[in-house]
Image 1 (spheres, rainbow, N blue to C red):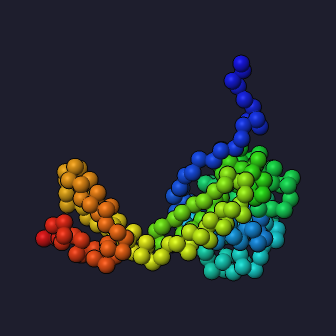
Image 2 (spheres, helix red, strand yellow; image 1 turned 90 degrees about the vertical axis):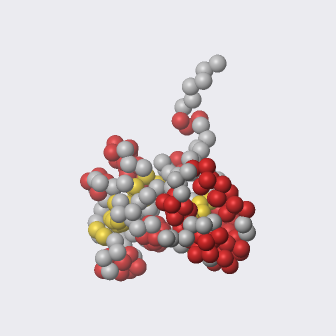
Image 3 (tube, rainbow, N blue to C red; image 1 turned 60 degrees about the vertical axis):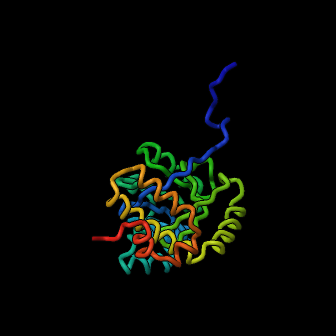
Amino acid sequence: MNSVHLKSDIKHSYYPLFLDITDKQCLVLGGGKVAERKVAMLLQFNARVIVVSPFITKVLLKLHREDKIECFQRVYTAEDLNDAALIFACTDNSAINKRIKKDAIQKNIPVNVVDNPDLCDFIVPSIVKKGDLTIAISTSGTLPLLSKKLREKIEETITDDYLEYLHIVGEFRKHLIKTVKEGQKRNMIMKKIERMDIQEVVATGLSQIKTIFGLTSK
């Protein structure tokens, strides 16, 4: 049996990955409402955003005037890809989108082509972001509607207690690593923290938890 498969024969399967795009150049090609959504999300993660399009919405131009993004109101050229870490093709012209994909392949830059999973190196999940907590949901491009419904349910579930718990236990863990050198002891302490309810941790507070485990600063 021939075990070699053509890429087109294999169902797309997306590996979940969180990228640090802080101060990295992310290129958005297209200047409409879809581009607005892409730009808004990229800015939440501190990306350096460049928009290239003959038409650019007032919202994007306002962000440009506020020095939050760069805008170039002209047609796309392959040189626009230089120094880009990620590319988002949001144009309404399929021929241009295919050209962007082809140029991106030449430069080994991951590209997302909106509404065309076959041209995507990555897809953008439905995202819940509250403070340092980020939850990504994907149906592998099969049914974005379900991702949206799940996101709305999760947003309802994530209360302020979860965010406070994240802060308290995150800070405690950093303090624990600095002050306790024995890995086995650190693991034992964290297991005890793990057994505490979220509300119990929040009600106790960081300072008191340090005291309970004998880790107060001297």
